[in-house]
Amino acid sequence: LRTPMLFAIGFIFLFTLGGLTGVILSNSGLDIALHDTYYVVAHFHYVLSMGAVFAMFGGFYYWIGKISGLQYPETLGQIHFWVTFVGVNITFFPMHFLGLAGMPRRIPDYPDAYAGWNAICSLGSYLSVLGALLFFYIIFLTLTGNQVCESNPWAPESEKDFAMSLEWLLPSPPAFHTFEEIPSIKATENPKQIQA
Image (cartoon, rainbow, N blue to C red):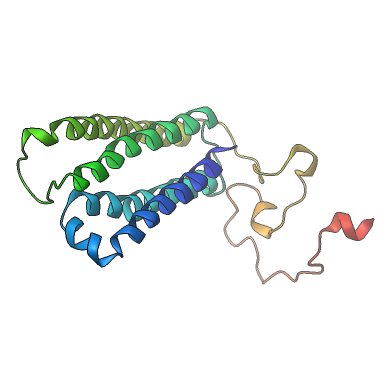
């Protein structure tokens, strides 16, 4: 799996986990007990924060080659995924336990009973910061490197001259005013099937 697909799968996993915790919060009896606790904080961050961020990372890795004409380092992109994925889960998953134990939101200090899970959350946040720094390093390497991106870096080797949409047939980055007029599509099926 390449880096954009890892982030897409990570998005689905995190968004689904956040959605499942939302089903629990939709039960009015449980919501009364869990309202304004760290359980809600964990749910919110799984659905909105991590879901949106992982989708943006996936989009960045998918399109940066076409936009800039330069290819990102694949190995570092995959390391970025795993560091960030593990970091955010270590940060936010224990917050469910804190919420179930009754730790309220928006407090400047907490009893020692919550110190263990909060320490684990802090370690996860340090790992997440490391992932963010790695992402900025990847951007730097991509934009200052000289690894040229192919017109369609996602196609298998046997189909490099074939693409399902026009943008992947153009060189990376596409020239300004590539199409002086809207191109007409002659066939909407796979050309290999038409020739056969």
